[in-house]
Length: 320
Image 1 (spheres, rainbow, N blue to C red):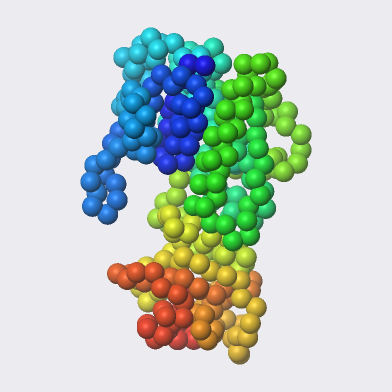
Image 2 (image 1 turned 90 degrees about the horizontal axis):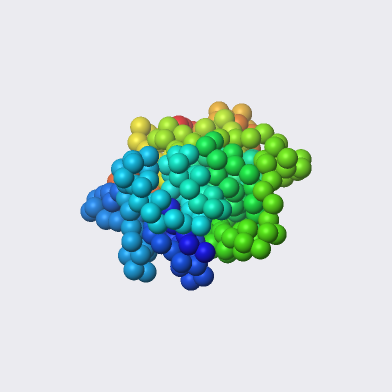
């Protein structure tokens, strides 16, 4: 099958490699080069770097609605356009171009988690299962008919970064299966409104890109919610709070059931104990949280015990 691939981040790379292995990839479309890493050196996206390695033409239109770009896609005459984390709405002219349409790889159940960050959202909500979903795009935002999905179990300690990497590999194979199913007629598109009630249904959530404010821990949450929030954001982009007027990043936080002395009525965000060899224990809206891994302003990552000892953390200190 003749394929045009559209994607940008590392999540999309396994799918591009899988398509190149089994199909004729005519070109890759990616967002513009931008400053990356600590040195802020302008460099290509992971998808562009992979496409160049594979010897594929790369397009980086400023706008996917540009007539010149649309004419070029029409000239290529793809059988299908495969999209994975391209992060731009695809115009109708492009959606209608390929014989099999534009197929999108989404790292979650649909219609449950639509939008930009479904992987962290699933962990934050305490889900035990997630999925990779391939759907045929329409002009809505993750609203197109479903073609194929594959369930995946979320590990009890799996971080958002780890889960996204695993879903990227599973998604690549699911895209290949979807293309085979379309070619041999085995797949029939299913409108999202027709999905049977169950794990994929319930409240439909539109997940939005994180802002600085949305990464801040609300200590009024229950301990399990705080732990899941931190786990979902571990590595990138990282949960945070305030401690003594400075940003304190939290890399790992665990529900705590040990002794907390006489601080049973502590306010949410208040340090109620220092667990020996482990770290500070903080009161949540319900329960307690152990800060197992933190990064103070201007310092590197350290375990909670080293933080408590080196920074003279005291019972009664407030976070947030």
